Length: 192
Ligand code: PNS
Image (cartoon, rainbow, N blue to C red; front, top):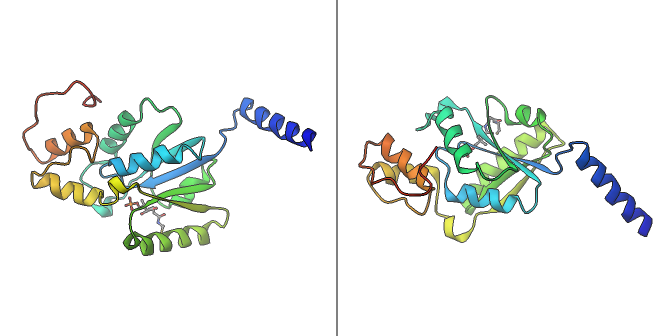
């Protein structure tokens, strides 16, 4: 038994040395824009996975507020100090994108039961397209369960405060989009 455990450790070590990425999850979404709810899922996901690929969907049919380039830039800036988070974008089917990576798991946040039906259908469809793929749902922290990109955009557009719900950089980009006054540059979190 002791030998078996040692052998497992050696295999794991060899895998690491050979550039194996370890456990990888894809965290797909529109991220239009990224919220602290999304960041919370990534941070908690990193307790389970060695690497998370944040995959921004290029879906023009959803008429996003931010272009995919703008979202990529924002999300990359926000995770610039987190080396085990990779930020990418994809077009077309999620399963096809996942197939090009070494991920076996799709990570999704679940805020309320109202999310469940949509997520259940999506996960079931993805699994029927690729039976080797699993979707792992993570309950959003209680501090963010009411936060969605859609409501963030609506509140910001109408001049409401979204500070504390999205990173400062996102607050700034929202104000720019909606042509709202931008307060004096702060010391942290505004660069990209
Ligand atoms: O943040 P969102 O908008 O809820 O994310 C939805 C997303 C991007 C994960 C989903 O729409 C998606 O996977 N789109 C890619 C197209 C696809 O694979 N569709 C089939 C899954 S039902």
